[in-house]
Image 1: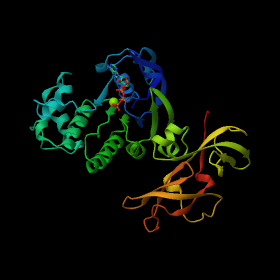
Image 2: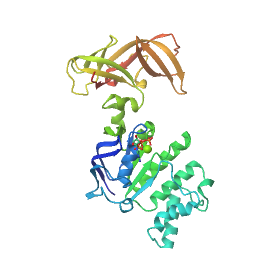
Image 3: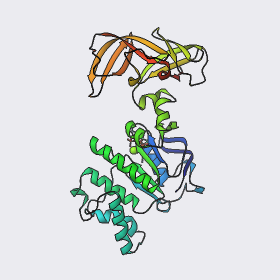
Image 4: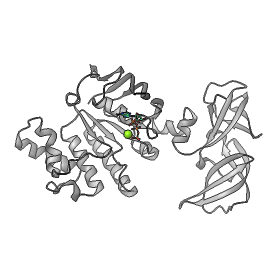
Length: 353
Ligand SMILES: Nc1ncnc2c1ncn2[C@@H]1O[C@H](COP(=O)(O)OP(=O)(O)OP(=O)(O)O)[C@@H](O)[C@H]1O
Ligand SMILES: [Mg+2]
């Protein structure tokens, strides 16, 4: 097992700064996810770890070894590319065996290792097919087997599930976590799908414009986002601008729409600071909570049936709120409703006007 450190890594392409002074530490055996919108620099970070790109500045370490300028084949990484990149004219067997052949592995060992890799991804029996004769999910498994067969020290996965349908994506998520745990292999997983990131990762780095916004466990990222970008990118939020009025055991805020809110104390704030209150849709309710709460009287704009809940868009003056309410709550557009949220679930974020 190996740990990975990126220290002050910068990589530019012309005017584009794909990685901007990026530092992160990935622990051995960890499933670490790089999450962010398209173009934020995720693939660039992964390619720098693999050695396909060298950084303009900064260094990359595998444990204590400086690998910054080490070519990819000497790093012991296995990579699944964003589009799988299987060789279309080669059989499944040859696709998977390729990395072993170029390492001059004896034939009988190749036979055994490819069989083990196919068993691991549950594709035994399909070795003579070509990629054209496989479904998307099967191709994805071949790409994973090809990356694993060389017994890499590090597994790099670039949006491996993005081409699969929703159901298969869920199945493959479980497959990947099962294999990762079984092999205890340090894994860097790239995705722009926040739900995927939350469900599989030990830790997540949220990236934006080449800059890391927050590195934390899925629970921390979701419940204690460090800024509005993270709060909004990881699940939805209703945002309410305001100013800190007072600080007691909670933070008292006067919002720009005239409502007074109390929020859980998180950041080091003082009276007069501009803030953004963030509330998750599922934290609104139409019944009074037992703990300390905030009240928002609002007008319902739309109600969307989502199967297990209703997503309710509402407004308070110019302010828009999104609440997730049980389907047995009878609300329709035009209704006036009172929404409650506990102080503990009212997050406050620093905000520069
Ligand atoms: N080889 C390259 N030449 C020029 N610009 C590049 C190159 N590779 C990446 N970029 C630019 O660097 C930025 C980051 O790209 P990168 O591929 O790392 O993003 P990403 O987060 O993986 O995006 P996506 O989710 O769309 O795959 C983008 O603006 C991209 O256009
Ligand atoms: Mg990418």
